[in-house]
Image (cartoon, rainbow, N blue to C red; front, side, top):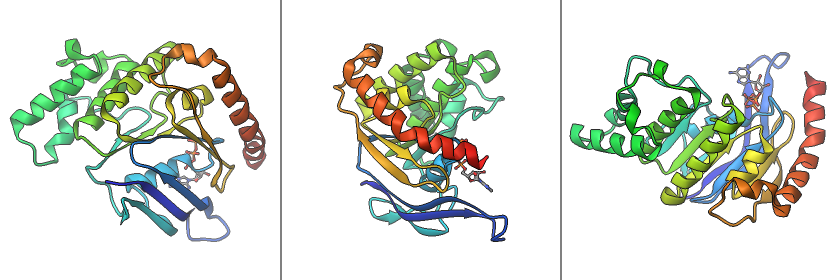
Length: 260
Ligand SMILES: Nc1ncnc2c1ncn2[C@@H]1O[C@H](COP(=O)(O)OP(=O)(O)OP(=O)(O)O)[C@@H](O)[C@H]1O
């Protein structure tokens, strides 16, 4: 399908110059096919705005967002989204929630059931296939959201702080699960997080965004071998990268706080 590209992108909310907010300003980002790309940045710097452009949920005020050279204008099945939380249909079972995304595509009922079954198993929820979201923990719900996004077989997986609401142990288990699936499926991933450890643990590359208006101000290659498990988080390479990203972010977080 090709790389994801944001070229000189500006996103402005509101048309009144006195009250409008410039979320992104002259942002450039190229994510090669199959890269696990992570964006970190201070609160309100425009991370979600960036992801929404790639998802086709929002349009740039100026500039261009494309996949494989094709301009993104709306959502499409080649892009799967895992939001932060609350994205499941409460009246559908786990199996039916995962099948839902497929019901919009041209997949037969039997294939739909089979694909959903496969991904429910991949995220370790076979025993909960007939449960409803209200019967699941937060981590389990996010596993369903991941299974639902993957079942459509998207080229690009967009994840907006998907583990942000989880406790740290569950979060760490989810990170390992995601890496295991990614190792097998090798999607292009754009993952947003506030958590520097999570960014390094998951990513091939960590992009650091500036305070609003957001642009990419640092690109850090994560040269840590895969497959990774939680033991890498105490390795010297990990600590070195963490220091680098923390110092890069520190001034931007100060600026964001001053902005209010
Ligand atoms: N629909 C909208 N209308 C007006 N302003 C918006 C809208 N969406 C976002 N903004 C503003 O644009 C800026 C960037 O928001 P965005 O959600 O992209 O940042 P973020 O980095 O994802 O934030 P956080 O880390 O807090 O989730 C913020 O100042 C926000 O208030």
